[in-house]
Figure 1 (cartoon, one colour):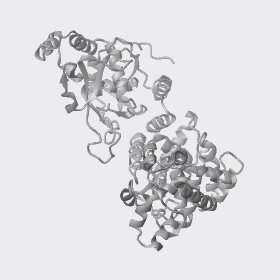
Figure 2 (figure 1 turned 60 degrees about the vertical axis):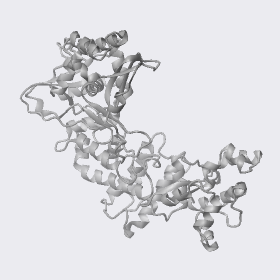
Figure 3 (figure 1 turned 180 degrees about the vertical axis):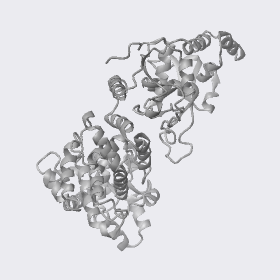
Figure 4 (figure 1 turned 90 degrees about the horizontal axis):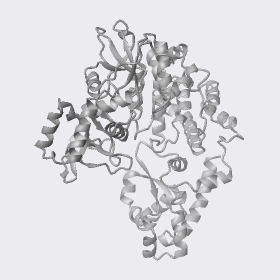
Length: 579
């Protein structure tokens, strides 16, 4: 890779870099991905700076003012919020002056900017997405009184809420890192230490002086590319981004699409669309990869592999022209998956949505497809294919080898979803959708809480209305299956081993409506059944609907017989629905 003759430049300080970002003199080209660094990486960056480790060189691209309006640029993100502010805002370019665009070093510069001028809000793991307190705003702090307790770190940098930062004791004094920009010289640093009674603490003095020095020291070493040729710049960008947090092929496709689409901003279109998909139903975890792969498949590009050669100007034009239909097809496929009860926890392969989206596009994306009686037969075939494919893990390995032949059969299907053709296509291969008796027996060992277990259970309940929330429920409560609980309930040591080995398997699982499951929680099954279904006929109906033996004692002490008898019923039912 050759850069311009005057490529290597005089290093600049972190203060200058942050100021240039703040004044929108440093921007990001559309070919850059968004922030992928997490808080731990930001902490390590600052620890490295404080210890005077090298943080690598940077590559900047000077865009002449006459060329500025030929490209799309984005601002650096300042106040990152995992749910509501993950995307870089589009830059408002006047074209009145040159700008500097970052080709390599975006993650490091964004980390510096967020740490010194912004904030970071990520989801608290155990809180729901819709909880307003699930994403606490945090600023970046340095503990001036203690070293880090982490084995590979020296300085204790952390993102903290304002309340957390108020903690003060003999080992803790949190200094907001961005405040170091208010110091003009070392006298200001010393005055701060005196005012906060820290001037006699050697570690505090050393740490704060070091922070001030690294912010004002020319540590940003960079090359400057001056070419205005987009093809050359794109090639440089691809080359330099082959290391670090690796540029994915979807990032690459999105980058090139953004540079080549004529009437739309591909990056804004696709990132916004991904966000909307993930808020459907109970929530999904769909990413740009799924959307970009879908673009290749749904626009009938012959080679659907993620290769740079497939991201040609012709293909990008094809995708842009069909984008509205592609977007509707993908959205409709997610709606359909949600109607089958799937969400981010149970849809074990997002790639399984692509053939569904392709089919929906071929039948012109009918708005009524998800609910209309007119489309019920096709919906049932798609549902059956989807559950079979997920259980068989048909999209593991190389999904293109599945997508290509399925696309051919859908293309020739004359408006019908070709379930039988697909089954025939993969017969005798590792991706076969045919279930032998051994396969069915193995499904009885599907584990509680495992994503694919939902697909197995859902096959047993084909008439459930998944617009309601359904839980995967232990028939005999999971809380009963501990060594101490089993001893209390008088289960022998020999039987206890069986109980502990088998209580999480399919024979002790059912799908139950959320509210009813919450009422049943930790309640003895036999007692719950009698209370919830007082008449014998009601109890028999419940047992029948949930594939449970009718003439077996339902006490906890009889769990072993119950499980053995129910497994026989489940085997027969699964064999029938999987035929």
